[in-house]
Length: 285
Ligand code: SF4
Image: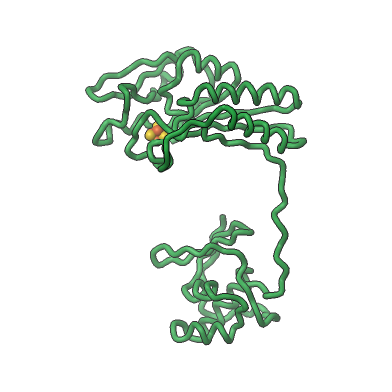
């Protein structure tokens, strides 16, 4: 997104041939003293003066004289004229008779992001998705839904040579059977279609067993750990649930060995992923 300059106080020299105007599709937001407009079509974020924001809130048809009459005495007529000119210049106001643009062109679908688990086995106090539940009931994606999603991806990807499947949550590995199913299904569909399929997975690491890691490795699935390792010692209570802690990244030793950060009482756990050898492990936080 691009932030444009704030509204100006002086009247623009832009010629205004039309007499009636309408706003383009915008979302208006006020944050503190700041007025913002997100133009939907262009995805551009504009900062506005108060007069510009007030003008964009008027119903069409918008004429300059009517706007000046409506917005006085909040804004003097010269300020309204300057705001009007600036909005025309930035194409936030367009002539009333300008045709609506057609729908955005639809390209092939090449990326699928599957929230396979709206649940998590941890309860991190800083979680921004309500400890995995997204504020709703905790649930796992059924295999049939995941299968339909993969099918849709391959149908809608058309002739695109590559597709991408990402796994998110919550904690996606609470739904390991469906993660496995999707990886196997997408891999075999890609082979049949002559496409390449790429995966990625973000996990808190607590459900990674040697078996799961071997599976991910065999299917070339890179995964990222959330950076919870730093957090437990800085939070007033233990975010763990069920006696296990997230995996910690140990500089200089990762991925040769891994231990958990201290649980309550200072105990650390070793985790069975010592054979993982890839450079694709990243820390996402
Ligand atoms: S591991 Fe992630 S999803 Fe789970 S509670 Fe912690 S921050 Fe939230």
